[in-house]
Amino acid sequence: MGVAAGPIRVVVAKPGLDGHDRGAKVIARALRDAGMEVIYTGLHQTPEQIVDTAIQEDADAIGLSILSGAHNTLFAAVIDLLKERDAEDIVVFGGGIIPEADIPGLKEKGVAEIFTPGTPTQSIVDWVRENVRQPAQA
Image (tube, rainbow, N blue to C red; front, top):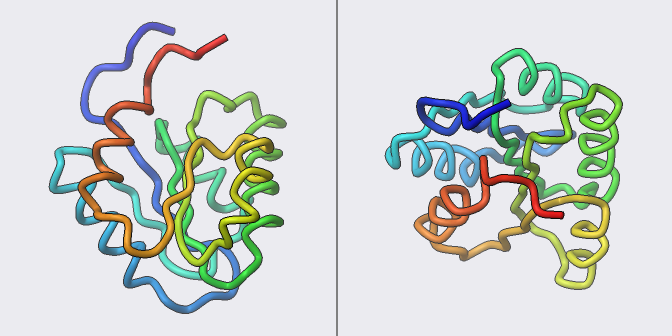
C-alpha cells in the first residue's frame, strides 16, 4: 500500500457514556480547518462502532475523546479491535481527562499520543500531520 492521496482522514469519536463533546468538536473543527477530512461519530459510541466507522471510511487515524475515566478500557478495546480486523495501520490518539500516571500504560498498549486538557489545538493538528500516514517505524 503506497502513500494514500488526498487529505488525512480522521475519525473523531466519543466512546462510552460521557455526554460532553465540546472538546471533541473543537478538535474536529481544528483538524477540518487544517484541511483534513473529519468524520465525527457523535456521542456514546461503542469501540465496535468506532472501529467499524474508521474501517468503512478508510480513516488514517482515530481520535478518541474520553472524559469519563474509562480511558484504559476504551482505548484498549479500540486497539484490540483494530488488530483483530487487520487495521493496525490506523493511528489511535486521544485526549480528555486522563491522569498523567495512565499515559505510559496507554502508550504501551499502542495509543500513539495522549493530549491532556489545555493542549493547544494547533499542537494536535501539527502532531497529526507529523505522525499520521508516516511509514511504520520498526
